[in-house]
Length: 117
Image 1 (tube, rainbow, N blue to C red):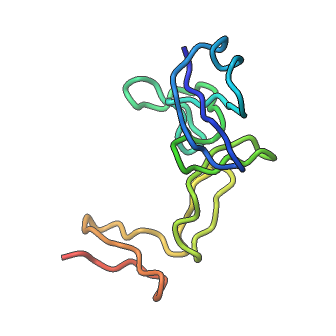
Image 2: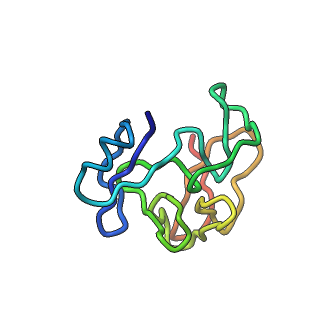
């Protein structure tokens, strides 16, 4: 069994676990996705990077984008100022998240991290 994402207009509309024979009998476009792939890295069952082959950038979820040209899944753009890293297939802010053990939220108007009290 494997995970498959149904694609409509380059958007994931459903993700199921099924056998390839079942998928072959379905209408529409279905693309295999790996539960073990995040940030274009393959992880083992303990969430440790294991050097395995990453499949399609990220595990697909409903609402994700499927980029056919690059054969990858990634989340929709969260903020206008963020840029898609095409090595990890994750969106990155123009300013790195602070490394001070505090909790922050992104403020798009100021394009900065704002501490949450």
